[in-house]
Image (tube, rainbow, N blue to C red):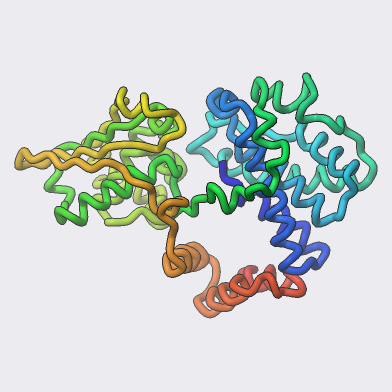
Length: 354
């Protein structure tokens, strides 16, 4: 799942109305983050495999918990918050590649805010909504592993162990190891599109099923398209926000190159486990040579994290669409010292365009 998006959006929105400190914002965020991650680890994997989008479903619990922390809810109010949001959480993976996919994260944040406010106003819900035989874990996951939750909250904090990923590319993280492998081949052999006859990507069903668009026509579809991701890396040596635009996706050079890229379900990779993000890129050149590259721990993941410079570069690239350079520098300084902010509204103001 994407644990930051729904929780931070909810905590920022509610925190702004109450003028909380940066330290309180971080506390609420980390509490919500921990709750949703432990829930995601505990629920039967069938929840995701059946097609639920965990960011929208379980992310709502993280958002609700963070909001409960901001509002200083009592234990009973917090249990009612979770009970309420259990009936509001939603999101299905069929909407990947459409505008509705990111809507899942936004609605999860909204549902968390609403559920916490309702509980504060005296709204009631089942206080045992997770474990109830008709409750969340059973209905949406056909069960859960209690040992993944009981006594495990904050022991260790998931954000520290096993850690989280911060995306270097604005596409599904399942595409990232393959993109890194492709970029390595492009740089090592100075590849140009005209040098390439075919590209074959070998992977398991855990990668190929969700990244299902063979010839995407929009930037949203391209986020779930291995042919596009590899084509962008070959054409531009990068795959950033500017590349995931409809105009570039539909351009003749991209559309033609994607037709030379195929994906192959590899039994050996499949046998290594559903939780493994593994792949192999094979590039057949016009001169007959075949270049191969196995995926490695992907850039931005816990095993290969982004450097501070790379994080700032990503922040600058994203913020540059809405903020001038001077403001971006100012926001960056505020973020570095967020724990000492007395009122997060100064950060909100700095982040607001205009």
